[in-house]
Image 1 (spheres, helix red, strand yellow):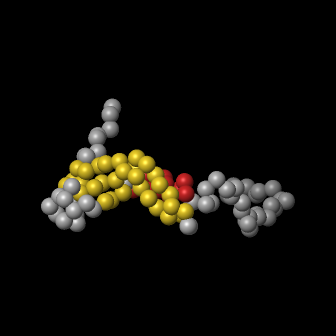
Image 2 (cartoon, helix red, strand yellow; image 1 turned 120 degrees about the horizontal axis):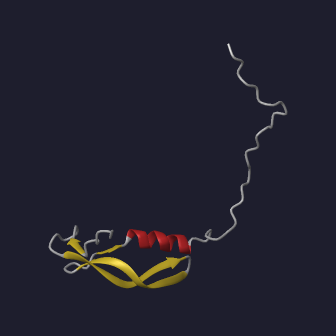
Image 3 (cartoon, helix red, strand yellow; image 1 turned 45 degrees about the vertical axis):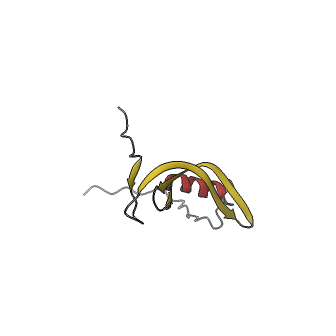
Length: 95
């Protein structure tokens, strides 16, 4: 069974005259003082006003990749310790 294809165009919410088309562009963003460029980044671009809307899934992947915490060991600072009761659990008594 195949998944339905996502539409490749929809009306522009900014100008209401244009149509948003999926294109692959170079995405620019700053990471601290460094300019990062990502080629072939999916974006929806209006053919009339030029408005750009970046693909949400691709942006979340990029955010995860650029996050300085990505790949670091996650350590628990204050683990919750449970007190072990040395007594065996009691069973309900039949009535």
